[in-house]
Length: 341
Ligand code: NAP
Image (cartoon, rainbow, N blue to C red; front, side, top):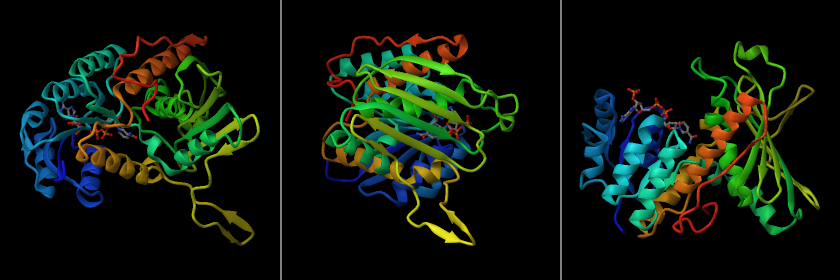
């Protein structure tokens, strides 16, 4: 395909609007040709801003010939139906995380895609497109620090909305680390443990922070601090300890200011600011792959399934206080490697 990729967006809420903005004003080779949302008035208003008609349902959008590829940004419980409908129509589909809200639903998607015979699905795990994470992975891959042994991660949010519940620290927040370490080390996660530290008064009734331990099939051990009311900003950290050295995500600031006896380094306010460029790169690479006539190469339906299984194990570990093993189904041949590129 050499012409513009015509994309239909289902779900015109917060992230749907942001992806429409980037496809309309930032990225090349793409046009938003259709939108849909359960709130048809919002869909009509968002569509009108970019000259895209609003469809009465996601299914009608998927079926329309003006749509070459689908982006699913509706809320999680609706993802399965739209991804399955896109596969049935033979159209590539980029689905915001989660792929689906249960492991069983993820397996139904895998089964449908495997029956179709080639990859159509990409899941929105954007850390894989972040410059700093990519540089970290390149250092590990170069062998400079020897074999990786451990990784220390921190996922700190300034605050979370009132509806945020304890288990969302794993299913919504740490799920990004779950996907990132599978990609970073090219291996599956085999076991999870969650420890519960003293509770922060900033979180009210919420159990915050949590401390999660992930065991990987290659022996790497990962710890993840999840603090969602840290107040000072959005701070994502990662340090890999290898046999011969360590490598960590660098400072995000292009400038360091020293004044009045203080050295300061700005901290992003939220994930939109921190991963702004990663979302752009993620979508541009998806668009480029499809326009070149290829399949999506980013996070696959298998990756979405694996993240769901590990996050379920994390929730079970949080509830029980015990170690929970992770067992995955047999991986269909379509997913040639454990973790997509
Ligand atoms: P949001 O603002 O609530 O947007 C979701 C939109 O989908 C809303 O407009 C909602 O309408 C609509 N919707 C609900 N059911 C639908 C249906 N059956 N058909 C079509 N549209 C429907 O939520 P959001 O924050 O944008 O999140 C959307 C998805 O993106 C979630 O899965 C979330 O996990 C994911 N996300 C990913 C990242 C990331 O870092 N990769 C970041 C943020 C969000 P109503 O409001 O009327 O229900």
